Length: 73
Image 1 (cartoon, rainbow, N blue to C red):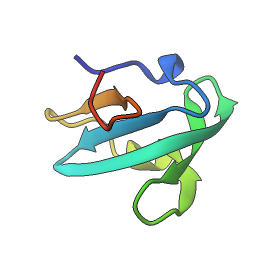
Image 2 (cartoon, rainbow, N blue to C red; image 1 turned 120 degrees about the vertical axis):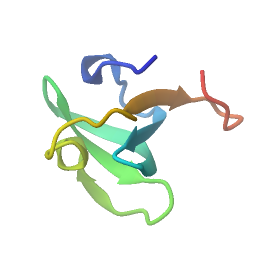
Image 3 (cartoon, rainbow, N blue to C red; image 1 turned 60 degrees about the vertical axis):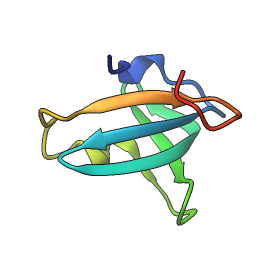
């Protein structure tokens, strides 16, 4: 079951899937109630989480926390 955006915590790592695209990121800081500055785990690019869902949420939407061993909690 997908997490809500307001349950994200600064410094924690997450995996989001939406419209067939999967990204792993670390939350850097909270910008508003449901928007965060995140750092991509692969490219190290920083962007706003809202950019990943600006076109809506697809049927495959999933958001999960990743623990320090790389497993989904």
